[in-house]
Length: 187
Image (tube, rainbow, N blue to C red; front, side):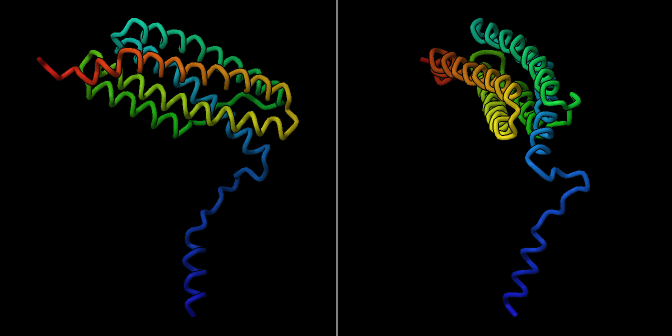
């Protein structure tokens, strides 16, 4: 009797797939590309706001460079779609939407200055980590699917995302985080 109850409980936890759900790795690859395409296009609209709210000249410069890279990433994703024979359509990415919303909240909840800069870096790095995970996954899918040109393009962007993350870490650790740590201390 106890086993039947547990089986019913487990069955309730199974999520029913939508009728247009991915049935294979190719479907996951296509869906991931569409999510990422939306994410990169939306990020290109958010980066100027982050740059406008930053005070560190180095951070502003880095965010503006990341905007240029993001625009290149959108273009490169369009190449990935083309080489893989997929129509370039964006699909709303809930993960990126949430990360960008969190970044906006950080900017609203902090005063202009070094503390806000630290928050902008944190928000930017969360975005970078999402992008690194997604580009890495899509690169692996492309390799597995024999989409070598797409895999090479995705690997190129993956490397750039890792570098951008390291750049943000460097800016944070060199001055912004230490300055933010002492921002309220008055001697």
